[in-house]
Amino acid sequence: MKKLFCFILLVAASCTPVKKAQESYDAGLYENTISICRAALQSDSLNVELQDVLAQAYFKTGKLDSAQYFAEQAFSNGQVSNSKELLYKIHLLYADSLNAQTKYRKARDELDIALKLFPEEPRTIEKIGDTFHALGRYDSAAKEYQKALVFTPDSAEIKSYQTSN
Image (cartoon, rainbow, N blue to C red; front, side):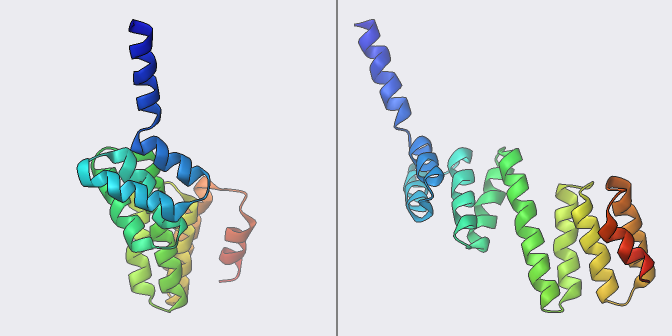
């Protein structure tokens, strides 16, 4: 009887919404994942694992605003690693888009947020340098490139920016 009860608990645990959502996500069924997570969050709105999987699925479908919202929810509720990385990626994408639209100051705001998430990430520091360069603030750009070189001293790309100014 005790073994049967343990087996039933094991089967029930393997059918949790988080597991279903993760399996759906792993299979590349992102819209299905979104449906599973949204339905499950109706009864368990603070489930950080569901929020995290939902944020990842929204990201994969290109719905960055929704991805950001649920990643922020998961991050603020304690799901730090995945959500933090996803928020970082989202802010870099926003910054790239804004830079492409020549909205450099707004791009810099997004990069500042990304930098707060990962202060020693040379990619972000380099992008800040690129933004300063686009604004014609070459001294500021050179300083940012120099900071990035501390973390990636062999970066030929960053070195080439420095020598071109």
